[in-house]
Image (cartoon, rainbow, N blue to C red; front, side, top):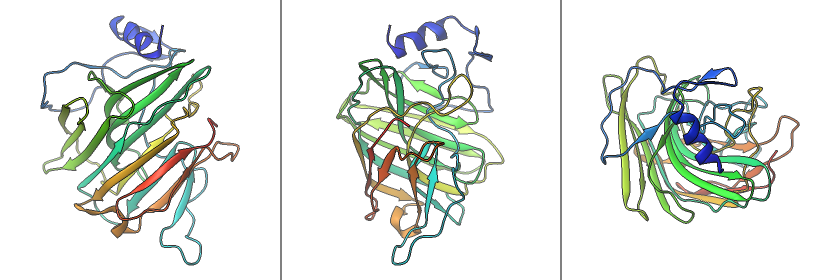
Length: 278
């Protein structure tokens, strides 16, 4: 049974307690509006039964460090994020596009996420949506999701396949309302939901490749071999991402082993390339 089938079997089981957690739909003050009639499921779980949160706040391995001489952006390392994060002001929108990478799977379970979001770099909340490629042994599994972290992620029940053209955005409207939107133009679907939540900082805007959380002990999951993912048209507050001189983030394991690389940012374009599962 693949990871998604195991996740769905556990979801159908309702509120069964798994690995010390109750498998229930995320609870937070929200209103929703969807651009297509579609089902969503509660937060996915790993093959071992722990909650899988494809998104989440950045875990810094080191304090963000100043850029080296002659470079534009500051840089940082993280045990779960790579990509770029803009900070230093209040953000009301972030957007980007990417091609869904092809997962190379051999053995064991690994996971990788690709998303846009507000908050999470220097705050404990994140408003985010993106796509996923997970490895269940030799089988790669693909899907889309959204999350108002620290509430659990919600899987979007639409088809995602490798090579699909994905676009996503998170927008703050007013009155504590956030619209999270993701589209797959190859499969011809768009999903949009609006959530209401107060007290969020909106202190960063980011485009991120991530090793999701969590193992049964709460650690970072192994990073699936996604090959290379290229982001284009990345913007924050309606302006090209590079105009904010965002921080470049590289993912490394807790032991300091580099897990992927982050290319230079050109306007709204950059790429992440897989190196190791951690």
